[in-house]
Image 1 (cartoon, rainbow, N blue to C red):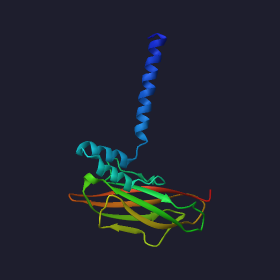
Image 2: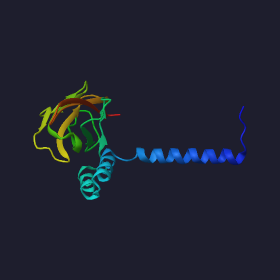
Image 3: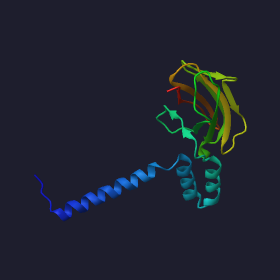
Image 4: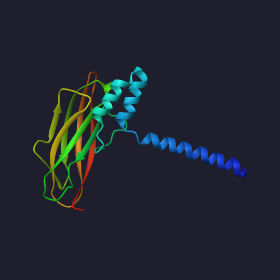
Length: 175
């Protein structure tokens, strides 16, 4: 059994708390902020990175949940413009932020509503002109109360390869 003095124990606890606080503060940074910081550090120029963050960051948007274990060549965010109600059509904004290091040349999004959720209009979006931040809007309509999932499959072509990533966007209607 290891017994430490009170002063040593307090010091260890304070160091552990400080380490956890520092770790948690890093978790609150967005992907764009981390990417911009990395680019600024490697290029030595923070102005372009800061501009990319300003274009791509939208405080009301939430990251879609991706299922890939490797880093995605894009970041997908979404925002519902209102509260989902059963039988009511609702706009959803999408923000796609390509990873600058991936050299993305084309993005195709295929959208599929799960049981209880309908996509109105086109269920696909193509981006041929790749910019630091790409925006799209679609309309969804919950058909019944519950928690539903909108599935987004992104087919991403880079200069050297093609990858597919699937994202899930939760929609809670009438609860």
